[in-house]
Image: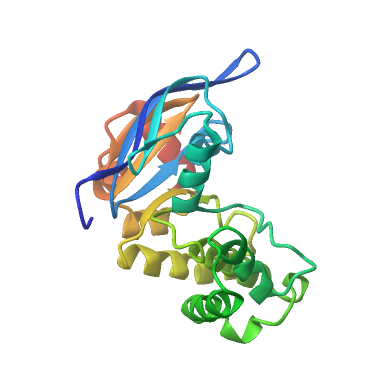
Length: 246
């Protein structure tokens, strides 16, 4: 971790879908430059929780502060936060009718008000960084799943975010394509990007995470370093979860 200053602060966050209490008073502080991995069974609230950080999901109770900006219903606050937070989803969500280059330059031109030339120069540098510079003028449908996910990462990085959220970024990929996406994420972590990652990739969590957290039934069960989490878990629920995935 580069600095021990908080960049994400979530306090006592509650969310309901109707009568279903999906987030039950979740609190989490993430420091600048920290990599936090969220693990847990399906339906535990992991994806919902990180989607509250950029207002893709509303929460009904509690408080969330992103880089000093309190998340509220004020659209100006939401827009300010979304400029600082990049997100990569399980499905790639690329525009199929736009080329790779056009997908990446769209937001910087429209939101950041960059010139087309500046956006294209940045996009080409990002494509080189994620290892698919030669795919710039192809359409998403011409790429493999792993290549499309790397485009999605480049598109998120094009907005120059301070935080990157990953919501099971490899779960829709064939096994041989997982590594190429995780390698890009590893390089981001080495460069000091603040990252919150929902994943079941144990190897990635062991190697890259500063902290691994188990969520279950809308609550945080255990938070520890990778070594402690995987080798010396404190909670019985964590031990049971690990017995099923290791």
